[in-house]
Image (tube, rainbow, N blue to C red; front, top):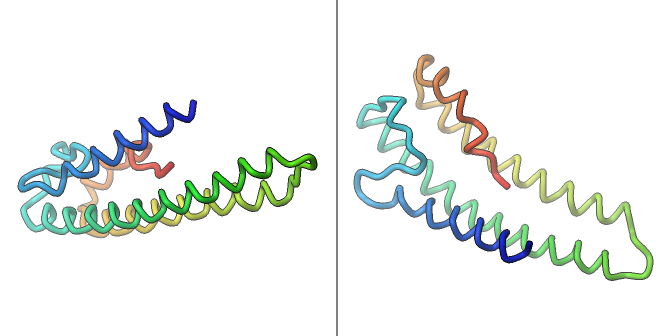
Length: 125
């Protein structure tokens, strides 16, 4: 299971690098018909997202090690486990919200309508 998680994370990180190349945008957003200005803004947003995601990933790994240590203990500290798990979730949601807010700002009403159908693809895990 741990190997599967590592593989998934590596695949996500590899996909994040796609937008760094000229004329490539992370996630296929061709259906939005972005103009050049929107494409440039989106590229900057996604580069920023990638940097923040990398920091989040390190944080998440450290926190998950703490969870593993809690499981190994003779006494299970339910409250501490919940606190750590909630902190991971809060950080993920914050990263997701910040990115989506910036994307929302550059899209037209029609583009936001189309984009709304693909929110699950942007979920930070």
